[in-house]
Image 1 (cartoon, helix red, strand yellow):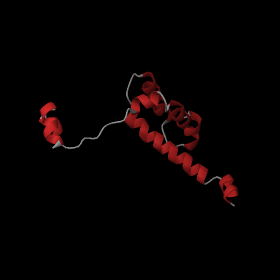
Image 2 (cartoon, rainbow, N blue to C red):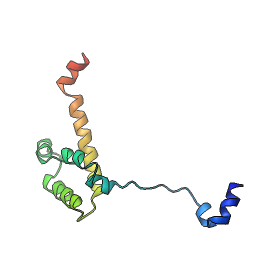
Image 3 (tube, rainbow, N blue to C red):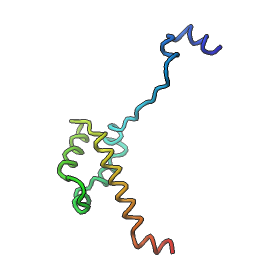
Image 4 (cartoon, rainbow, N blue to C red):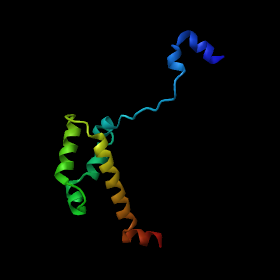
Length: 102
């Protein structure tokens, strides 16, 4: 019954279609509310000490993204997740954690 009512006001092709997902505004979030978090994870000194990533390349992409020159959200998100994982592993292996748990 609800569909019949909708058909009067909404084009049928908008009602009779598969469900669709939606994207999150990650590019804007990385430039806004998540910027400090991302800055901390992409700290050049920390990345150099870890030795896994090409620091100048990551820093260039981060600067281009922040300035709006390029949208590197997908590249940066993978790097940020890797950095967050490394940070979590470091905290988990910390001797301070053992003392707190004991």
